[in-house]
Structures are given as C-alpha cells and as structure tokens.
Image (cartoon, rainbow over all chains, first blue to last red; front, top):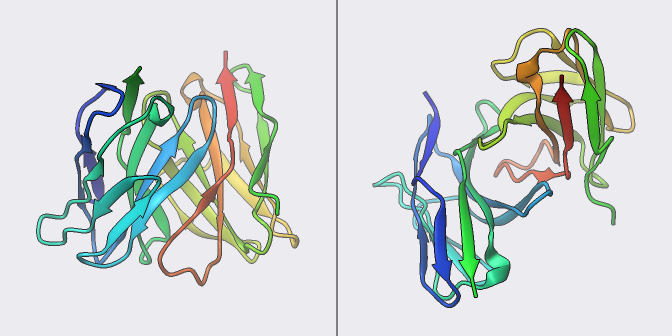
Length: 112
Length: 114
C-alpha cells in the first residue's frame, strides 16, 4: 500500500553543519511530494513541494528534488541554524484518494 | 488573512465520553480534511469534507464522524472515547480544485483521554 519511509532519528547537528534527511515513498499513480515542518507545540507548516519528476522544491535554504526513478525526495540544507530545530515530515498526495500520506517524521536538533 | 483556526487548543476527557472539535478553514478554501497525529507519529488521514459531504475516509471506525457547514467550517466528533484516541487532531484546508494537493494546517487540538 501507499507509504512513506523516513530515515530513523533523532538527528543532532552543530550549527552550520550540512543536513540530509532521506525520504522514499510507495505510491499509486503520480504523486505530488511535500516536506512539512512542525515546531514545538505547533501544527504543520509547508516547507517545500515538488509536483513532477526532476522538479526541485526550495524554501528557507532547504531543497529537495523529485526523483521518480528512485521514488525519493531527500531534504537537504547546506548550513543549519538553531532555529531549524523541529520535526520534519515527508509526505505525498495523489488525487485518487485526496489525502496526504505522511512519514513518521524525524526530529532535528541543532546545537549552537 | 486568517489561516486555519481550531478550537479548543486542549481538551481532557474520560473514556466513554464524546468530544467535538472545531475547525475554520483558510479564507476562500472549500475543503476540510482531518488528521490524527499520535505522539511520535506522522499524521493519519481521518476524512475529508467538501460541499457538506464526506468525500474520502481513512481507516478509522464509525466512532469518528464529521460535519461541514455552509460557511465551510467543520466539526470532528468522536464517540465512546478510548485511551488510544489521545492525540493531536489536525485540521487542514484546501481548494478541491488544487490538483497538486497542497493543504494548509491549523495548530491542532490536543485531546487527552483518561
């Protein structure tokens, strides 16, 4: 069935370190792909999206490329900040069932 | 422009009780989806409403029901609460015509069942 697999966490990095969070998906059809971020005590905020193969979504220094051949959408940032500490969720959407399917999320902690 | 709002922020109930959660969508949006987020997990789709009708439903029992009003706001009702219903309940709004699936989330309602 449809699913999203995210790398196991948590992840702890020093400020200015490089970040990669892996995400792969199994979906029926041709999904749109998303990264959402959840700060402590808050709901989900859309971080970036990509809707077709080879599209690159980007926002706030974060990037992810839609790789159809590997069914992946890995999140990267060249230099993380303390303010990036949050939980990151990979998700996809297909029109067939009108829902977002999420991964389990990964907690990122950035230390000064 | 107000985003998605939810009420209440927190709620404590006991097993067997019933609860109603409320959601107002982002201005102009016509579709509301509800998700359950258990601690340490990703959100799970409960159902989606459009034009006051349930369009899609996830793998949740009939104890979970909903409603959408003419102004597009929505309610989630859960009957016969179980301890396992303790979670963050998220409401998301969107345009039905948004084929790319972007949804905007509210801050959530934290439900604790004792």
